[in-house]
Image (cartoon, rainbow, N blue to C red; front, top):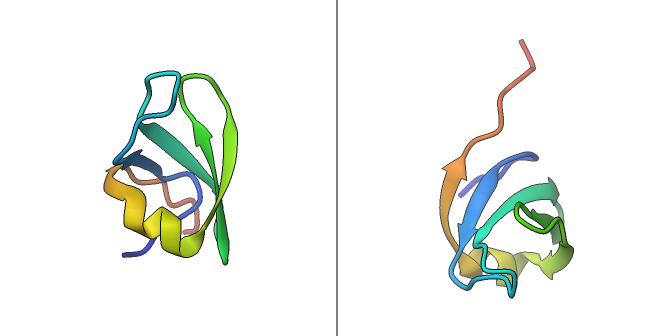
Length: 65
């Protein structure tokens, strides 16, 4: 599955604040994601991120035209 910067994803497990939706801030060998409720940022290895993603909630808008 392809992920883009700005995509909002739903993870399998909730964050301790109670939210399960995250925005992707960085893509590479590691992913940096930000909780949409409390703003906490977390770095995850690619394998762990891809394993724990449940669904893409919202795709980022393409601004390249």
